[in-house]
Image (cartoon, rainbow, N blue to C red; front, side, top):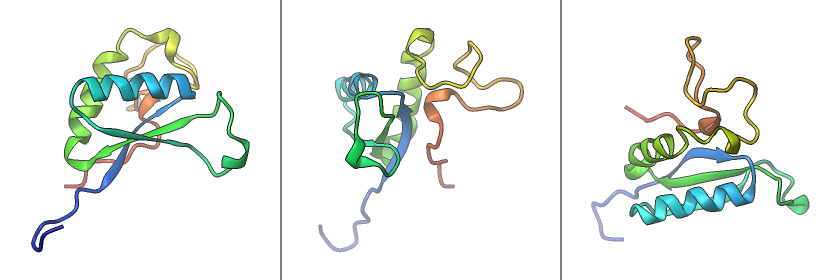
Amino acid sequence: MSAGREADPLVKVAQAGNQALAEMWKDVLHSNGIPSMLRMAGGLTAYVTFAAPYDIFVLASKAEEARDLLAAYNEDEGDLALGRAGGDSDEGGEDGARPYWMEGAEEEKA
């Protein structure tokens, strides 16, 4: 890396309920020019299963675009909402709750 350039850190933008869903979202991001990385959520990596949740990371400079893309993609995908706690809506409700797939995602730094 050349002097004077700051690194673009990775930030968590979503959490998928299982590996298949994480891979699908990664493909959606990749198809739209956003490189991403998957990592099993939690610390019990010795017991990885297909049903384990996965975190999705992108470069901080692409985080907003990735969140917008995943929000649009998941707008009508209620059947894919694995791990979502109750309710039928993916969007934040009147109580200000975040969409299920953004649980634990880092907030944008001002």
